[in-house]
Length: 120
Length: 110
Image 1 (cartoon, rainbow over the protein chains, first blue to last red):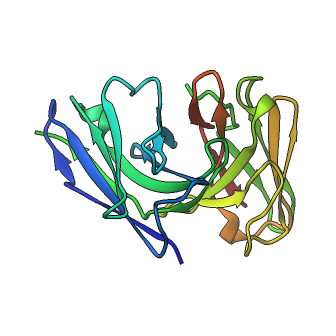
Image 2 (tube, rainbow over the protein chains, first blue to last red):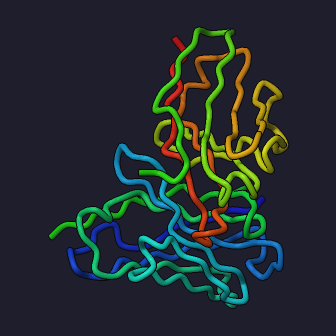
């Protein structure tokens, strides 16, 4: 059974860079059919798509976040990562990692999510 | 403001049927598959419907999906109190080259 687990600091200071890693177990990140992505959910609000990457490094980002987001993949560790720079309180959210079947497909496996709070 | 539009809330009595709409445009729903997710309080979203109208293994046939033009609909029959959750539609937007979610719909089973 595929499992995804987010990890990283739960508290980030304003103007700094948020960094999270998603570790994939029970399956390989090296698959032609899958993309690996990040989604976030501010407290009490809806889901926001952040971006996605495949094992070759081909990536797509939410236009509203593109200038601040970097998603990368480490196939040797079966992990992919999110970096969001110049964070503000508006970036406080639960961050989920998920597997996407094909670029125009669906999100079939999700991590449990991790809360990141931006505060000094 | 979400790219896909969903009603903020819907409600119905146990055993009844409810539908949740998701409206978009030709750059997203009109030319791409729609998926639906159920998010129970405090948990990660769970895939309910993929490719417009397909159910993953383990999802009961009380849940159904359809798409027409630039709109999609999630249907739930035989409502149970355990169905109380937030529901989200999602698709790819070819103009944005990005995934997009609806704003979410809170289902209350009265």
